[in-house]
Length: 297
Image (cartoon, rainbow, N blue to C red; front, top):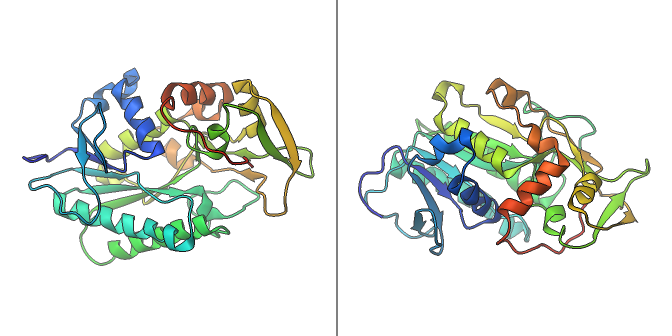
């Protein structure tokens, strides 16, 4: 893929679960995303896939000559694995910054996680000090710090860290909605609840950040619906059977992201707080994604 591409939006890691859902959303977008979907979008993957234009490329290989992009959306990352595997999250973030410099991109959107907050008992804002308690959360925080360090070294691209809630269709619960699910039950008799983000709503967030004035681009942004959702309500909306187990000591009962930052950008995402709509999007956008076999909780 060669030639001038200034103004293009380059999605890195489009062969991952979130990337594949976003490709489906933007291949047949809702009305409010139609204009964004008509922009020149480049979907990077390690292997060619049918559909949207694909840049077949892997880290460590020189970029195609003449590749240009105005925005980098770094969807890639490592979720399960050893601590050494998880360190690749920092490597991939640094690679995204290198690609931005080489392609002339002025902004980079990085996928971080609510896991950096640890196990708070209150709704966390972007100003809440991170206190990760899992290897994944620690790895994502290390990635964030590497990005902030790179920012202080020169006039590189503007960076936004998206601290995602659970992405409907990409977390363990949704990966198991094809059969009975086992949920943790806590001392109050309730199951876990999480702040979720629906695939279409995630596309809306990315679209807004990709085209808003640079002066409005936040450094950190919580990405989720306005209210957390009980996992049991999602299972009921999907019509699957549930079984319960006593929550182990390390289990997290609730994760609630405050979304004032999204509201300041004019983004109100009620679908991401509605169990039935989350399930409907899961059914629409994950038909080709293999299920996960893990306990949700």
